[in-house]
Image (cartoon, rainbow, N blue to C red; front, side, top):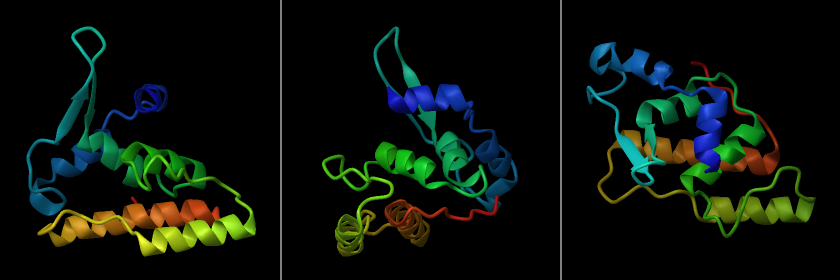
Length: 138
């Protein structure tokens, strides 16, 4: 529900990813975005990879609060160990050690691009723990 509300409230329509996709295979090899649909007949929510790409790369510099939300949506780290901004120094060290010890792992045989994306998601989590923005040049 939080993801659905954020997409609606911020107007993330996937336009940024769609514009990149129209440039041919420079950025994406697939002509259509991958989509995921949740819900039943009357309360359906659909998210496209173009929308996710917009949230991660189409907004300019990413602030810790936004990256924390993205990490929550992406399930990294698992929801049992939520990221918190401005943790105490000892908690921050423990969180950083945990993130470094267990970076997001792509599936076996994943392409180099998927491995890079997993690294970026791990970097977002580390930036949240450090309470620093990440510069994204879109």
